Length: 428
Ligand SMILES: [Zn+2]
Image 1 (tube, rainbow, N blue to C red):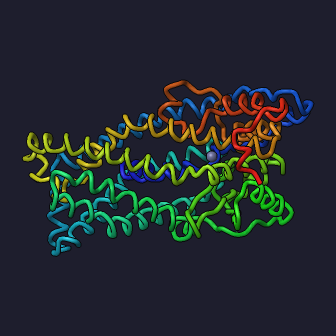
Image 2 (image 1 turned 90 degrees about the vertical axis):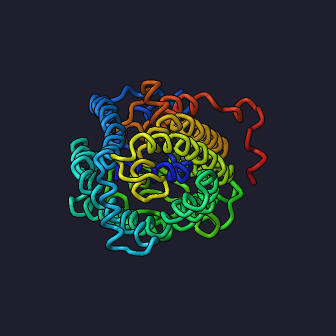
Image 3 (image 1 turned 30 degrees about the vertical axis):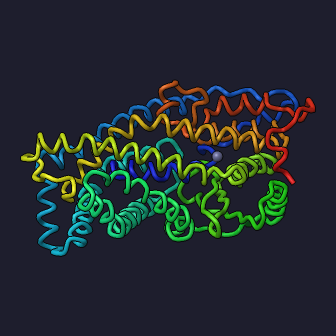
């Protein structure tokens, strides 16, 4: 499941191309607002709790990476995957169902194996640091829903790459990668209306005055008929977040209710300006070809190595062709390994988009101070470390570090010097 999550995360990197910044969990400090409105906002030192969360997070990241390689390797080298395929053949009979049944059994076993680690990291640890409000029932319910969504999606789509593997053993990686494009578009299109509401309640904004200010900002950003949703995230977390999602008729800006509660109006308007930047600069559309290319490169690498491993270990694996569904843990294992190499490239792309969205938000609101104090609150509420180690940044940061974002908000004020704005031509 953890390895599968990696793959899903990879696809979701697309949607996260639009997400604002990571959230936080403790009440914001007053120190920033006590200063004059033109003085730069200092980057606060991280709290002891934040440093401890950061350090244990690195350890947990390493555990997850190793776990993500170990579990599929065990499925493979013990021949267990081949046994699941034999069960699936007995239950499913017809090729299409064999793949679906294999996937369902595989996912459920992984879910159970991963449960202790998921429980520690998603529930125990988040509560220990005061980041989570979730009841055990809600946490477990969400896990089960995630599993069911995984099974349905797998049943609907996993047969496609296996059909391509069978029909075109030499070019399957290219065709699968190309088909990932409509799949990604479909996912971005339907996730906000079919998937996300399974986990939290989405509704219109409750504060109508604030909504009016946000919609006025949207009009200036050239966004017509933009919709802003408030999501009841406070039942899950204390962290702050906002993001842009969907495409066409389903596109929307989503604000966590925690963010509305903890940021003041000017800070919230900057965050909205940032989100509108993603929208107007077309980050979702630009991400699709970028990630499709990364997927094709990764699948090609899998294609080149998988055959060699099968030649060498087919007796232990219990299959001789990659088109045998028992190969799924092999594909996941190789995907996890190559994913580690590809991650810094993908994250650098996302950080670039986030930086440009920050620039857009600053230019449209021209309120550097509100931007900087919003970042300070994010740092404090989300237990973030403002200047993480460079390796942590390269392998984990989908956004510029909060230290960099606060520095940029303090320094970037072309409007004060009468210099042209980079995105001024886009404003109405
Ligand atoms: Zn963003």
